[in-house]
Structures are given as structure tokens and as C-alpha cells.
Image (cartoon, rainbow, N blue to C red; front, top):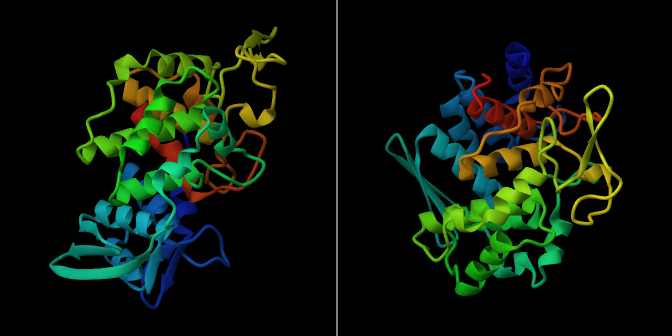
Length: 315
């Protein structure tokens, strides 16, 4: 069970009052962002804590324009608050308390299908790596998900085929790539694209999840384990399907969040030790970090930890 009082304090201390309203930032000295503001609002809602919704709307209204990331997270913030939001062409429009606003969006010109590449094996270069500063919310496939969720047009058959290739693949697809493909599939179906087969047809997804499940969180890739005298688990030098051993493939908060979300899609249970694993990631400042090896707390880590714990019945 996390120290929720310390966590609330951590989030509140990252609140930044500007002349235009209230946003949240990663750390002091940084400007508040729509991204950090969304993770802060979502975390407070999970814990049932009041948030400065009206001031957040004013903060988002202060943007002159949005790029892909700020448009995506502004939309998610506004939806949390209860506003009606829609991307119209390259303009994000919303209505809140009878007030209508709009902001121009500088959207990428990259065709969505190109985010997926042509070779299944190339997807794994988009993995979360706890040592290079990337995370599952910032990968190229994550950017594709953001564009699709925002409502960009032109979801052509090439894109559908490449999503299906990931979902049906029994080769070296990592857990985070599979999670992003499933999320893209869900959004596409919500937009009226029923061409993807049901989850039950993809037994490989369940097999991947099982192979990535040690005694606590989820690993990024399927790993063979051995039991130590103290009943802990460690990975063997080579994994079940020939992946090279790397500490980057051990359980992190990103891979555990991805595994949990896949389990939710498939109606499966998380590993018994997942609560203990996540509890170990809470720092002394009250926030959560990505890895048991150490690291700074971030607002997105707080959100991921809280969502897994809440949906698992641990809050």
C-alpha cells in the first residue's frame, strides 16, 4: 500500500500558478506542461482528491497553439474535466461551461503506417529503455496512438494490416509494443474500424504476457527464470526465445503498466506480487520512479503506479 499522503504532497508541490491559471511541472525550474498536468489530474482523480479544474482550463487556454503532445494531453485533461473536445482539421476545439475555444495544432506530416516500419523485428527498437530516458508514452508507436486518439483522418488498410501483424505475431514482439498495438486497435474500433479480429483469436498475446510474468511486475520480454534459495527469481542468461540478456528487459514500471493493461484487455489477473513491486518504486519524496535500480520521481510514474494499484484493488 503506497503512502498516499506523501504522494498527494508530491503532486501538489508540482503545481505551478501562472497568470493564466494552474498547470503542473516535472520539477522546479521547468515550465508547466499539458502532459504533466494530465498525469497530475488523473492521479488526483484516482485517489479521489479535488483538483483545480477551472484553473487548469485557463492554463490550457493560454497556449498559443499545440504540438502533437500538448494537443493530446490537453484533450485528455479537458475530457477529465468534462469538456466536449474534438479535433477539427488541424484545430482542437472544446466547449466547457458554455464557453467555446479553439487552438491550432501543428500535427506531424508523417503517414501513420510509417510509424510501424515494414519489418516486425524493427518494432523492438521502440522499446522502453530505463537507461536512455525514453518511456512508453514517448515512443514512435505512442505518437501514432496519440494521432489516432486525437481523431486524425486517413486510417487506411495499410495501417490496419500493420496493427494486425503485431497482434498476430509470434516472433520477437516485446510487451510494450504489444500494449501500444492493442491500444491503437481499441481506438480504431471506437472510430468504426471493425476489421481487427477478436482478442481470443490471438493466443500469442496471452503467451507473451505469461512469458513476461515473473514473481512480481512484468518484464518487457519473455524471460526464463530460476528460483534462488531465498525464493526470489532471477533471469537466466538466455531467454526462452533467444532474446539476449539485458537489464533493460527486467521489470520496470513501464513494462508492468503495459502488462497490466494487456491483462485488463484479456480479462486476466496480474501476478500476485505486483503490489509489492510497485510499492518498492515509491521514493522518499512521495512520488514514483520507473525502476527498482533507482531514479527520479515523475508524474507519469505516479499515474501508472496508481492506475495499476487501483484497478488491482490495492487502493
